[in-house]
Length: 317
Image 1 (cartoon, rainbow, N blue to C red):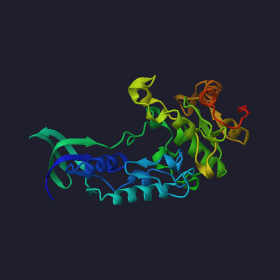
Image 2: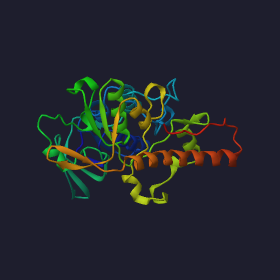
Image 3: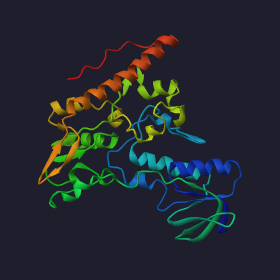
Image 4: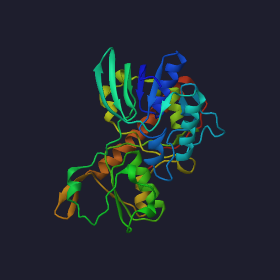
């Protein structure tokens, strides 16, 4: 194998493979370096009941749109892995797996890379490693009693893998809400710290909300045109689930069923956690965001003269 390439792509997930497909289509000499195996994070850092929160039809990697028989369904973890493996094979991606990049530096006529497979060089390098490898864990977690099991969302697998009964889930982004639901449905006593992430309905006026937003061009909006600008990168996605065919995640209803809701974690004082008095505000803000999305859909239906069934608005329990 050559040790010099026009382009080296670091990372063999969906982003790295997509870049490889585009480069190969233009006959650009390149190689993709993957530290583990294709779709490693989908295999290792997702729980057993994990599934997509976006419909299958939205899986449209370059040259490889979803072609299964359930476009409006939601692929489970193992199906996602199979989809990415099939994508790799579809265009014979020049992939080197089990290769770790340890150093990247300017050198020669481009860049030099130190890897577990030896020294490599390239005119250009694409970093496609993603931004979620390091969990965000508050420092006070270091002071929790040692007999309390602590894991990040990437380490969670299934309800019966956690000891005891009561489980505290901190954070209500998509992972936090779905893990809380997984534990709740298994009969565990769940304590959920509700943050500022907002929610969306799964379906509205006869269609998946994602389909309406796609028609509105929401997913084509470049970051520099978004009203939050670069700040949108730090904004949590709305929580919803594709589980059991897709549905809303209603934290208020979970509370009626026995889940215990709290505001944000503020800190640890001795052996007691303290919580901000913002639970009601956070729940109301999540509902308001969902209603704002529905308002946008309503305006579009009216403006375009779309024949869509009427639907009563969600009323919080």
